[in-house]
Image (cartoon, rainbow, N blue to C red; front, side):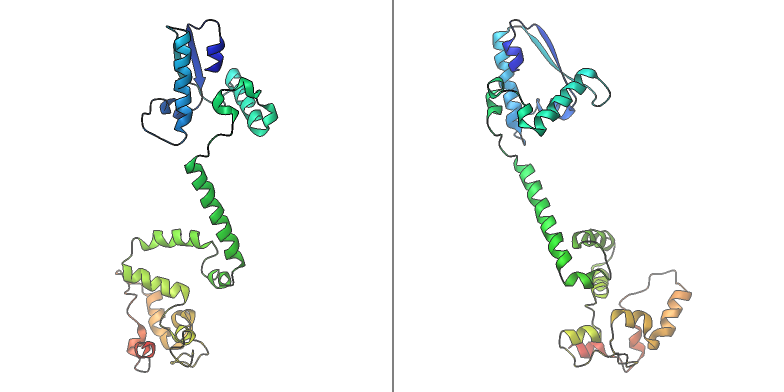
Length: 245
């Protein structure tokens, strides 16, 4: 608009822009991020029309990066100015708004801040001793694992999702975990005297449950298996409910 204002005579002008969102933003009447730039466009337009009465000024969208010479040249000059202030126009040739540092966009500042938090968190997580335990059941970051689990858990009943978390993290009512939280004296498996009754031992390795496990693997049932049914209920010697209490 500054260039048009300085021209001796303006009757009809078409300004080509390769960003359709910018053109649409000129029609907005509500406040939006960086809306002060659109306000500056309207002020410049009013100034031009006041000097060149009856002038017709139109904004026209043009596709980007398709070899249009004028658009490619403008894009190249914009990149030069953005990469090095020395390539910009002299301050006295710029509109007043651009002669000083522009305000920081609140949405852009929040985005940068959140990204910095995530980077700091990921760096701290990589150095954490808990990562060594966590990587056994998920090699991603906690945020990535949370998204994955949420996608799975959304279709499960709450109690089933809770049980999956216990099994996945090892915080299940098995002797190893109960021993860790000092609820019982020994982490041994009560059915086979294995040194530690972990989730892996309980589900896969304990010989006391070989038959029920193999039955589930070899003869899958058409209905879903109730994860809250515990094979140990068939064995009188196993009583985790009383141990947990």
